[in-house]
Length: 313
Image (cartoon, rainbow, N blue to C red; front, side, top):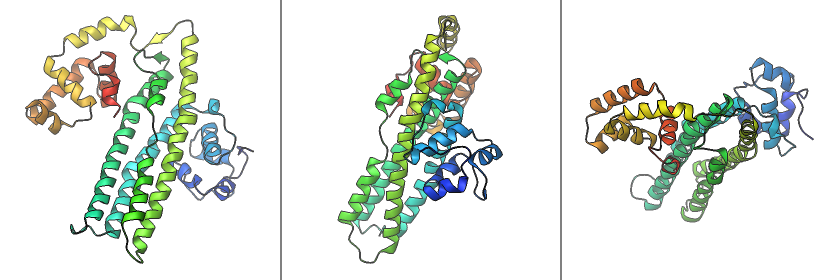
């Protein structure tokens, strides 16, 4: 049986303590007393239906992705990304360093840390791609525009779990790092296990709630009598003119930006000064009237400066 708007919020947490993380990602603070789900959601300006569908899904109860609000679930997913990248994963690393011998004399310990750091880099790329490309595409859909160069199915076909390597790290520590009575290591190992479970749930929310909800919007727009395309021919002349006013060097810089390079990295790669790169980027923004990385990525894909495969890494 699914949770309802009239259920008391504390009963949800009593049923599944993992929902504390869900609440935090919706911006819901604790201390809600005996208030109902509806009252708490209204107090925190949270979309009630989206909150309940996520809660029901995480609690293995019946859910309905058709009730999900795309702006609301995008906000939730962005907050989850912020939690992992800015708090949870760095916190685990600090505790891992404290728990094992990182003096440089223990090769296994150093390999464990390197394995973890490489994993976090992969997670960051994965989540930043979703933030900057996928969510921007969906926000464009919400405004009534399709894009011929991207679809949520293309994203879903390549969307893989990002928790598997944490499971592998857990096994490496258990099998190859023998140390008696290491309570710190046992504690951080438990945190790794919980993080792996939470990341698995996060990816499933994207696959089972977010992606199907986006597909509904795509289908609705395709069935409409007047389809508006973000890359429509009415805009192609303007975009072509804009592309032609870019210098080859400015196009090179856009390509570098879409690959996640910062100004210093672009300067080193193109043998320019950082000041020159900064000037080029300012000129690009003025010419295209695009002022965000997400906007440049979509522009680059739409104008075939890059392929989507070059970005999703």
